[in-house]
Amino acid sequence: MIGFVDDLYIEQIRQFKHDSQLLFEYSLFLAQYMKNNVKSTAVFKSLSESSMKPKISLRLILYCKSIEQSNGMRANSQSGNNQDSSSEDQSLLFNSQFIQAEEHHDNATSALKQFFEEALKKKPNFTQLPKLLEQVVNEEEKSRQGFEEIIIRQNNNANVLRRYAQLL
Image 1 (cartoon, rainbow, N blue to C red):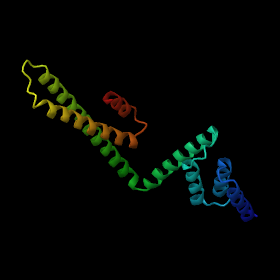
Image 2 (image 1 turned 90 degrees about the horizontal axis):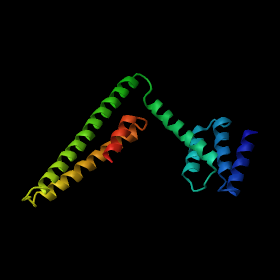
Image 3 (image 1 turned 120 degrees about the horizontal axis):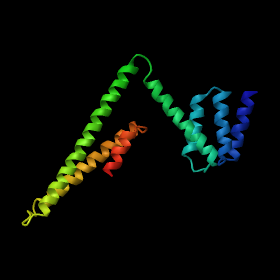
Image 4 (image 1 turned 30 degrees about the vertical axis):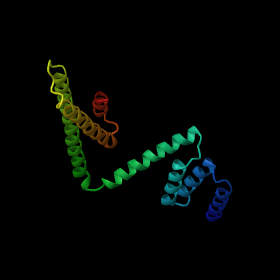
């Protein structure tokens, strides 16, 4: 009986290829009745990555499902005895990246101060100005990249978002 329903879904999907609701229901059917989570996840991904323009309620469900899957993947990768050491490694990595990004930002700020001090002198050294400006740009870019990497890993950390906003 379940095989017959699966065949019906497949035939309907062939006829109505751009029906997002049908694909959503098929992925739920695969997960709940067929117990085929791999295929269900593939259908969810194709639904969220496609250009079907699902309704806003369906988009919300897809967003929540993608977050749930990413949290599940993180939980699976950190399971067992390695979870404590893995979280410690993540914490150390976070702290080192955060400190390094702040150092780059501080270096850029000091280079910018040197740039303005040199530019406002009575007799500025014009050969040094491009070097200082290049240093400002490079340090700010390194700082921005560091904060963006941290935000990708720690997207709920308010302190990181606050420091990144100050950088911008």
